[in-house]
Image (tube, rainbow, N blue to C red; front, side, top):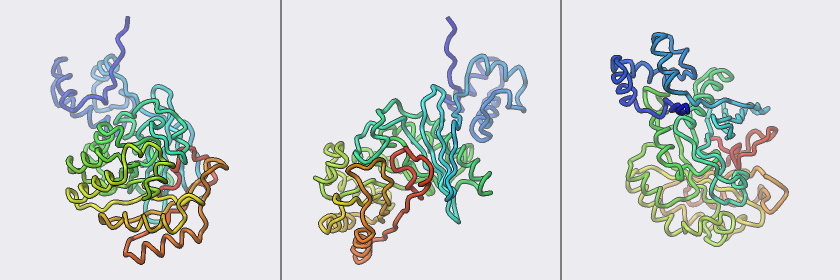
Length: 347
């Protein structure tokens, strides 16, 4: 029975060096191969041109490179690019390139499907199949960086973890991916240009603070009234607002980094004065800003976009209380954005 080959990108640089030493080669060969894998982003051993043919054959005999493939790519009239990404086991996730005049943002997935049950999100209708590996997250970013250079003649400038899945429920792999993305041996991006969005997993927000992460935090809040929040995101019964408030206060105390609240306003759900007042009060707990998001309907059901008047009421109330607020318009409306609210995220 043939032994299944290990994905070489699951190895650390030290493990690669040890492999070469154990096979009668010099340790520095591991450094060479590591650079080809991550910085130069090769998908085939034969493309490692500075490595001898014998070494490439040995790698081929022992390892695989389980790289992603962009299965289909859709380009919107507004410049948004959506990738359906096929993984090595034929599962599919989505990632999106969102351009503005001054930057390009990658919106990436962290899980295949999602284990949470947000009623307004298309991804929640897909059961969670598995977590993405660090290299699969990295590959999404690398692919969008290449597309940004191709279509907009500039490198990728920002990354948001707002695609499929809950990043904090795949925390170790997300952290390893960010380490690679920000490393000079990887993509060399600044962690300050990365935002990780969570639906409010309180204990993991505290862990991020304890780990002294340098990236930004966004919270998909959508209501600061417990009953409404539990109705639209039932899993939040396990992470009530007082617990989330405490976690965010802990985050700010440890990191001194502002929190961004992602907030969709829906007709007849959270478009009233009571909801506005509750959000204003919640925003006073820690320094923050609010992104009001234009809803991208997934059907003709319960969740419908609020009126422009309701959005204006939110803006007036927040600005009156010196809270920074921006309205995020839906992007890529003319392409199929099945990944929850993926198309809405600008940065």
